Length: 92
Image (cartoon, rainbow, N blue to C red):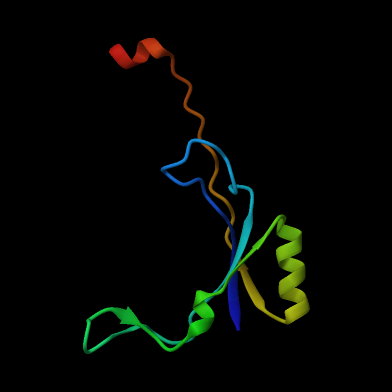
């Protein structure tokens, strides 16, 4: 069983940083998704991919994975870009 650990990014619809510091452990799929013959939607029989566990710190997520014997792939967070601009820049 394999999983990946990543830090949640800020939603495009939010202005604050709520839940952006949480770490998520998400299990990877063991089988490929296939289209349903009736509806055409992609799906599979692997229900483990629906499980997402949230942790307050990276260490807590790694400790849980080590305790349960889950092989994890760590995805580092993207660097934050800070664009400083003044109000007058909107009218150039």
